[in-house]
Length: 231
Image (cartoon, rainbow, N blue to C red):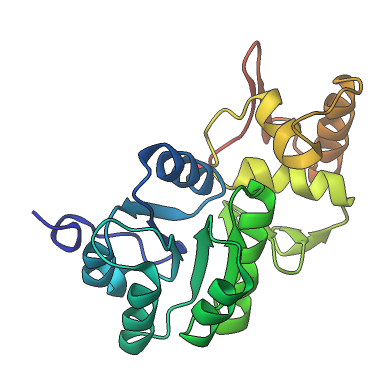
């Protein structure tokens, strides 16, 4: 059964197609993007990418595919659709970048790349091509808008610092899921953070005060934090 026959992704999520034949890379990328709140699936061939194209809002395209040259796949994807294409590849030569962009790619990222840069590039191409795709996360009366970096609670704006916003967005991306302290530090600070870990508790306490409901951000002892799902 084909990907198109088995998938019915929710229409309110940004849907990302990862076209990558290296299972290790594709599994890491898809898992990471799902943590960021994207609906993400992976295929390993150009033919599968072309078949599934209509289901997705953005394509991450590796150029080293087993069945067809990725540049030709890029050309065909662009001929069929205006969906944003972000090329991710080990080919770092200028001529490869220029060729892919000339054939319709919206951006180009050379391996190895940082995950924060990848998600930033995805959001950038989505903003340029689809202004209505905003990255707005809702949980009951709480609204976290990643594009404007505003937080609303029951229609009223909540003033938060940049770090507080990043923590709240990390939790809101998958409300109800326990997010470990390590994951929060990796995404909000840096994966090599060596400062005092209590700084996270200080920010969580500040968010709870500002949101006016200490129970909205729950502590799961020994595991991390989660944003309480609305009933």
